[in-house]
Image 1: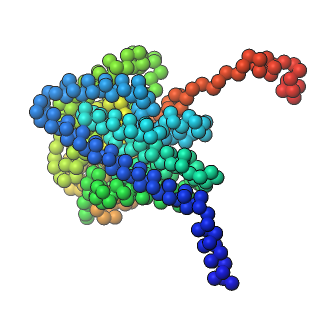
Image 2 (image 1 turned 45 degrees about the horizontal axis):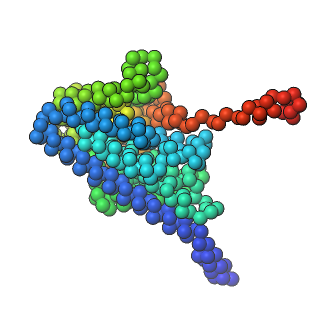
Image 3 (image 1 turned 135 degrees about the horizontal axis):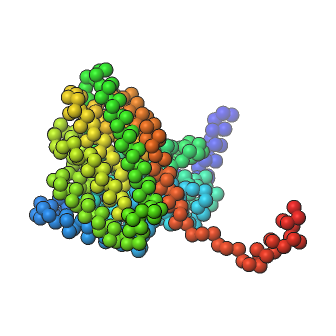
Length: 458
């Protein structure tokens, strides 16, 4: 009897072709999302190499090249792909908002926007702008996964919102080679709905996208591996100082980003940005170029080279690197180009960790670098668990797990006292792009206002 029961359930499972088609499509599009992020990373790396080669031939070329590229990118973004501007994470969060109708999601995520995001962000790296590709990867992968909706059978259990969440998380998983970080990003940043958290099929898609990236790029971290040994209580006070400092600076950076991008027009800078966006972009690009030349090229690009060298024990720029990298990242984003802040935030945090270690003469510089990375990223994004998991997977050994978690939570808590969550605020700006609701016909308004109408008598 029991054997017959299980045989009946197996037949019923295999007979449901809609279920198997849904599973196959989700897995296929998750793999395609992972491949798209791999292609995005290759394109970004190629762009950075070309920019470095340009600087090698003409050291002063960024003073012309970077501003002109910034203007071109901003013009193309505003003219053809306004939904591709900014980080990409707010667009996915806006597409998940209940106020957005299904036919309006194309304003925020689509295959067209995914392709534009890849090209424009890579062009920004080719220009030497201070940006990362991890935030844009969220929008790219979400657009890929959302495209699967049109092929799914009717009455499927997988919703468009579920595909967007899975795609956005897959972008983080594939960009950082951290599948667990992608799952946590989905839970912490993209949704708080329990039915989406428990979807095994969508979580499998997130993990698959991360594994696709890891299988092609290798299982190493994007920023390298942090080797930490022999931790003791001497790390407590430097770590606490670093966590509080990262929380303060990350909160101020987040607030600066929100206020400048919101641009209510009360100051001359906001009016200039609104009325003359191309000349404003030219000035921002020139500012990034000047900062890059002052730092001998250290602030150009995502910050990968500087961060990787720090992790190898090299002593590079002075204590000015962190604030100047922060300034270059802010100008890049303020200009209006498609740009992420994950990688620059990790580089800024790593530099501050190295500065604290040098200031206090602490022997555990790698540990403080790791804590700086997790602290500043958590403070900027106010997503402490995602930041903790991303950096945790870079650490060789588990001795720092509690230290990283504590630093992430403290820095995020301090940041919340200074600024509202960055991506939530920027999502509201994205929702402002929705067309206003259609006005009611005059005849309908007169009927509703009439004393004889049922509504007036209720």
